Image (cartoon, rainbow, N blue to C red):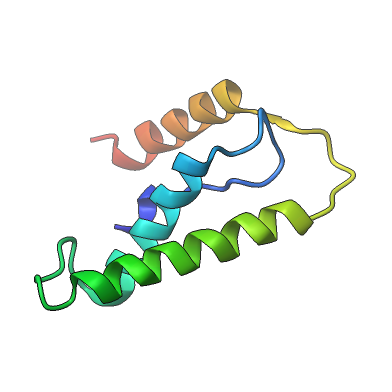
Length: 89
């Protein structure tokens, strides 16, 4: 599950709210141990996702770096190359 959480800091263009929400959702799913909560737990699950997304957005807004922003396409190519090497038969 957590392999779907990607680095969000220092990209051009910056991470979108959808990307932040997706990372928060994956985190809560991992911690909760399920991808879909029961109806009894849905409200708590949704509150946790919202809180994690808000904390993540705040963190990203406050982080400072002197490194140049990364290119999303180049990073995706690098990730695919690592995956090919890792899962090669």
